[in-house]
Image 1 (cartoon, rainbow, N blue to C red):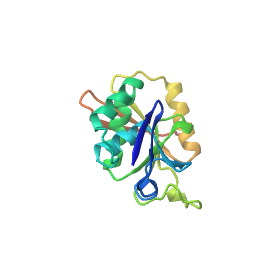
Image 2 (tube, rainbow, N blue to C red):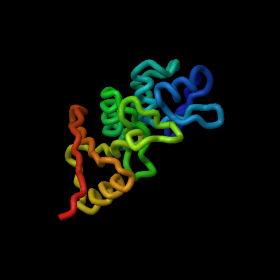
Image 3 (spheres, rainbow, N blue to C red):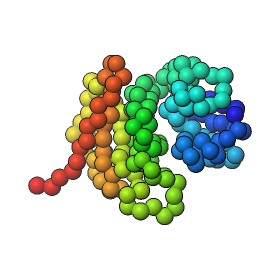
Image 4 (cartoon, rainbow, N blue to C red):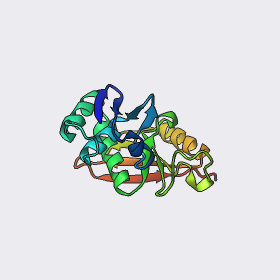
Amino acid sequence: MELTLTESGAYLAGGKIEEKHSEDYYGKLKNGKLMLSPSETAHMADRGLLGSEKEFEEIYNYFAEKDNEFQEKYAAYADLRSRGLIVKTGFKFGAHFRVYARGVNPYAENKGRKEHTKYIVHAVRENKDMSFQEMSRAVRLAGNIRATMMWAVVDSEKDVTYYKVNHTSP
């Protein structure tokens, strides 16, 4: 497989890219290439799945230089994947990730209720300030798609703690 890094992620060409997509749930197939987010790229490198000469540290540092939130994003992404969850980009939901439960095929066309996005996750540093309005918007958006909003708070040692916020009516 041939890996090419870009400003917004990377793409893989050749090799078993269909398998990485349909069985391991990495990336998005487009024009015969597997388009990967920065977190997906780094995670695949960390697990030795790229078949590339580029090392994890080189890839991690490349994306960390481009995105000042990458350390938190990657820590959360890697932690969620280590728990057996399927993690995809959450850009269109205004968060870093959308997360599916184990065993769910996120590419299925006719999903049952249990097969939709379970969590919307936004990764932040442990000392990040956030307004109530920002939190409220995120919770309402997640609620609109029947998902739970979670913040992945990453400490200085890159340990991740998750906080769930629900909307309730008095």
